[in-house]
Image 1 (spheres, rainbow, N blue to C red):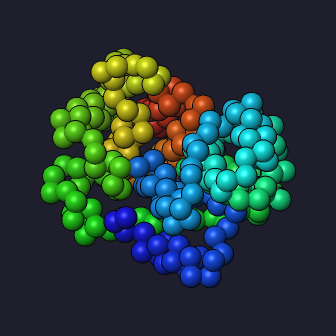
Image 2 (spheres, rainbow, N blue to C red; image 1 turned 120 degrees about the horizontal axis):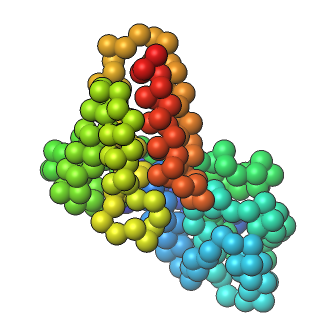
Length: 263
């Protein structure tokens, strides 16, 4: 893996001491390499891996399978931030005393989204931020390097980034002219659900918008900046959760920013 030097050293230590934890939580942004790191652990153990859904019925089915299947196996629950309380409690029981030869991994965006009881029983790995040198070693596209902060994000097409940048410019112009109509029109370009085709990914839009907004509104007074930051941080927390309508969350943030600017 590119980067992740400290985390790789942790893997080496586990291997040398033959002490790989039976329950691991890997936290990091989308595209940071959480699943790749989970697979690296799996390869190190030379065992089979199974990727599972996070619904309660899937969790229960996986637990039942883990108790009946004796071969060494790793069970991976991806993007478990929005796992229901019932599913988390079901998983809690099995990670306290895992079945023989069973390893459990959960990948999450934000470790704070997990129940404290689960977090305390797992070994937490936080994906390390990628340095500019590491990103430059795999990409020379200046536009991508301006906005992308991890290896996964670098996979986006250059033309798609240009389209997102144009949409952000439309939003900034709407804020500048204090036009709610233009603001909502610009938001129609955002993806409301995964099945929407030809629409802009909300997470990438948010990342580019946040950077552009801070640069565009730097001259504003301290009150406006602090107020705006609270709206932006609230939206950032929301869009990290899979069950949230990201488009609606961004529209709500932009409406609040517009109200602040009008004041």
